[in-house]
Image 1: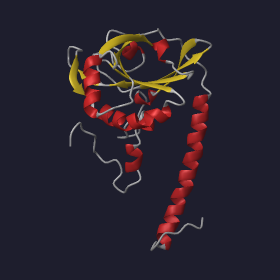
Image 2: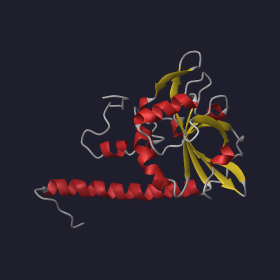
Image 3: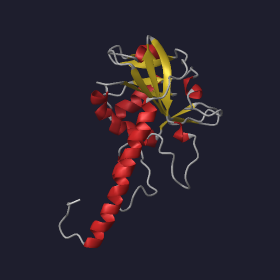
Image 4: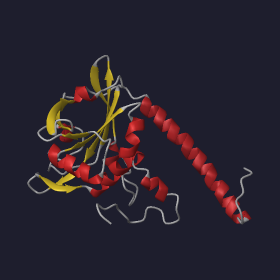
Length: 228
């Protein structure tokens, strides 16, 4: 490599080039994993869940089924399960998860681009009116919002524990020959972690962490909040 930056020392260049070799190996491995992911066989056929969606034109909720979320000839659908943390009775609180909020804050602006290739919706167990109010307060303009209240979706696809605690999960469904099938879910959430490392199962939707990873301080112990 002939790259040099102003004022750098030979020690810095040697260390940087060692790291670069590791970055290149990581890039190759990431693509190998992505290729294996793309090659997964189809999973099971899900129930055709009936969600609730906010109809902005009518200013009211309407019913929509999972099979109806495939629009515009696009045959891939990602559903992100957004947490409204339940209390001990399993009733959703009126407080949205700060981490999920941070993720969708960033994702919302990219959705017009993403929507050219695939369908995306954000699913909460909270009533759709409450979820819509939260989205309005955050200024989201593009996120498609759904409520899974009254369905078994969250529990079936790992977004809810048996005690009704909500979990952040990303799940991909595909449509093949008119049939909806499960394709992939962010199961790293349930896999063992290395030491204190967080699952990082939905970091692919959340580029903030990748930026922090490029600094000397790294991710640290900081977490997003609803207000600063």
